[in-house]
Image 1 (cartoon, protein in one colour):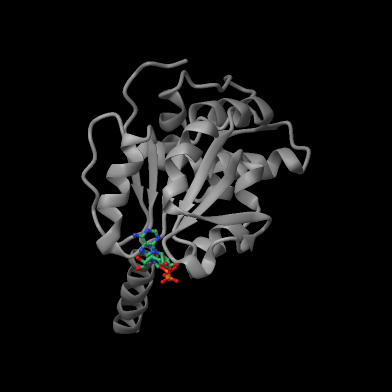
Image 2 (cartoon, rainbow, N blue to C red; image 1 turned 90 degrees about the horizontal axis):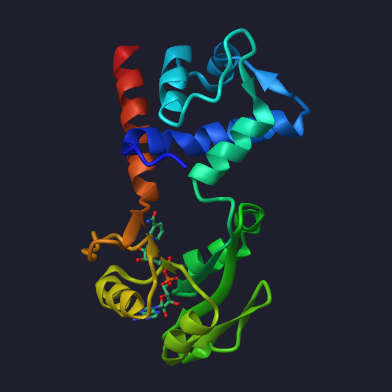
Length: 212
Ligand code: NAI
């Protein structure tokens, strides 16, 4: 696989390529040109060629891209050719909604455990997964080969929980708490702030109204 350093901007576009190629594959389409991909995705064909060239191109002059091959290769680059075992910490509104969303599993992200500090939730089943107390988390992470932890706890709790998870061997944190986590090198954090996207939408609405 490619060792070259890929910019985060390119990485952040790969899931979108993967999604569109998956749709083409499901429609039985075998090949696609960068121009056709460009039309569907609203990204310039040259941007697409440039992005994919980071990984050796995959395209052939006059043929375009083989959809299935490109889909598989981008999947590998994104680490989707293997399963990831996840736990969620915080079984509140958001934590439960994420566990209930089955589509993550299609991509190989498997929710294995849910943890919370509230005893009233212990034993409650969310899509068949029992909420456990925090004291069980350490052993559970070690026994179940957990590599990703999802944080859906209040922001005041997130840093301390992240530190504990890292000491248990967690390599990736999908953080929904509104706080920037400081983690040691080698640990990956992806912060998700749905409100950022909403604010961008709000900005664009306001700008459009001013222009009218
Ligand atoms: P919630 O109050 O319904 O759930 C939080 C859960 O965390 C509760 O079950 C609580 O018992 C548990 N908890 C609290 N302290 C804990 C600890 N030390 N250890 C383990 N569990 C603990 O809240 P909701 O609505 O599910 O939101 C969860 C978090 O996600 C909040 O920080 C909220 O601000 C954030 N959020 C972030 C969004 C985003 O786009 N990033 C969107 C919505 C919420």
